[in-house]
Length: 239
Ligand SMILES: Nc1nc2c(ncn2[C@@H]2O[C@H](COP(=O)(O)OP(=O)(O)OP(=O)(O)O)[C@@H](O)[C@H]2O)c(=O)[nH]1
Ligand SMILES: [Mg+2]
Image (cartoon, rainbow, N blue to C red; front, side, top):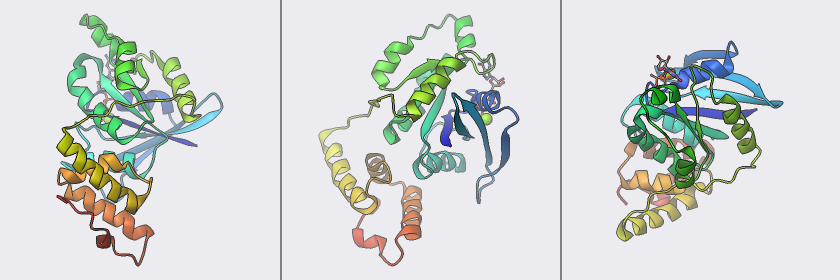
């Protein structure tokens, strides 16, 4: 079963899309050890079964809140086959911030521009082809409430899980000085975790002093590599 994550800012229609796709085939509870709602459900398309996870709405994937932590940890540690980022067509500028963060983490991304009916009403015209060229991943206009654009979305999803869509996600370039530090840390992260996790993104977060992510990585390390001291690798926040 292919695992699909639904990420996006609050109120962009993730749960509406989730409900439209999974119908009654869903169950809810809490994320382990958290008081954040966890909803997952299944659906089929072209004989392929998908497990869809509705993530809490967040503005970023840093460690500012439990919601952000849950969304971030799912995308990093649960390895979804595809992450669909749901954007509000009427406030793209704000919404794209999260999309760029997801693109830093994974190259299996589909951008869904939702509430396209609202954008139409406001006379907002979105050139999804141009956006797709710039972002390097498929961009699809939908209306979750009216079930518009679903065929194209699901066909794209099927192609992506089969590895038939090549993406080139947009990645921010920083100043030479910062890039040097990123490269240095990235090598260390690779040494510790191999290709398990997105090393460039982790290096960026460590440079930013994200202690919460650091501790979570340490936990993951201790789960898999008992007996070897993480600290011996001298990867640390602010290194
Ligand atoms: N007009 C219009 N409204 C929509 C569409 N999709 C969702 N909505 C509405 O947008 C509101 C928010 O939808 P939700 O699905 O709850 O959004 P969410 O992203 O799950 O929100 P959080 O869980 O808080 O992050 C609801 O009132 C929906 O009915 C759409 O395509 N068009
Ligand atoms: Mg929701």
